[in-house]
Amino acid sequence: MRVLVVGASGLIGSAICAKLLERGDEVVRMVRPGSAPAVILSGKIAELDLAQAAPDDWLPHLSRIDAVVNCAGTLQDGPGENTSAVHFRGPSALFQACERAGVRRVIHFSAMGVEKEQPSAFSRTKLEGDKALMARDLDWVILRPSVVLGPAAFGASALFRGLAALPWLPLMPGTGRLQVVRIEDAVRTVEIFLDPASPSRLVLEVAGPEQLSFQEVVNTYRHWFGWPPARPVNMPAALAGLVYRLSDFAGALGWRPPTRSTAQKEIARGAVGNNEPWIAETGIQPAALGEALARTPVSVQERWFAKLYLLKPVIFIVLSLFWISTGVISLTIGYEIGIDLMQRTGAGILSGPSVIAGALADIVIGVAIAFRRTSRIGLYGAAVLSLFYAVAGTILLPELWSEPLGPLLKIWPILVLHLVALGILEDR
Image (cartoon, rainbow, N blue to C red; front, top):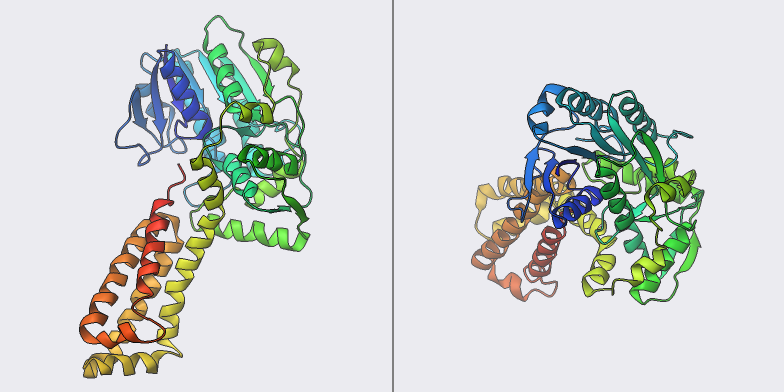
């Protein structure tokens, strides 16, 4: 078959592409503009902004396509993220184009429970997208999975790993139970319904065999890692609210933490459902989380990722605040000290402008690191500026190398931390 997979870079989309290629299908990966990898091992890749595309924009990509699998989704509105566009308007245009192009088989990923409650824009727009597909004359299948977990670490799959690395597990108030499902079972479901002879016009809840608390999911991962159960700590509602608000602020800067306020609203109702129709239609016997994890030996990469996951936001916060605060200090309480230091180099009347220029450069770098879109530029700029400070200090004030507080020596661990940040910057 020739299958178009929309949202091919995500957790579900990438797994589906891998499986279809493994079984010999031709896959066209559809990703947002600018996110395509420089090299792909197999298959084809196309770029189109789902949120902006009209039906006519889809038609060239639907030529000779046998089926479409839509895995696109976004948790919350923010810079470059629009739930209505990604879940409703964009898919509606895609479904209309499929109808016009004669591509009858469409498999669409929604979310569990959206037909019962819509506490956020995420679930409300997911339901709108489902209804848009149901209204089309297509052989559609709507899959509403619970929380999907797998070898790749995106979203909740990454969060559970990160929390599993903590000896004390912070428990948010008001979290519902989860009927987590393995990515392998979701992918197998797509395989079955890609068959033109398979049933269509179905809405199925895709869920695992057990209902687990948040704590039980995390401790299952800890058991897999070979670590003892974490000690639970109930987080006060005020502190939990602060975490969600800070995550929303990070979202406004372009980052996508899984702990934004939409998650707060969605996890309160949990993610449990009736998986019996899905099992009856597919014959799949979903694997329990512990059983599925036991099939794969834990690797050192998994342990490294788990321990680094929650350190990543700390690293970026510290680096951003470090550069911004040094600039602010240089312009305020540390201004005279900076002038004195520059005069020791013989800068003379240029001392003031030099201090101000250096301070502004520090602030610009700190702000650049804080924003996701410019973070890489900021990190490179910080590394270059650090090296410049080291070279200039060595030439103009070599005695700084022997000062007790080591102002030049401290440049090197700071530089290494920037390299670490560059290494873990990408989420997928």
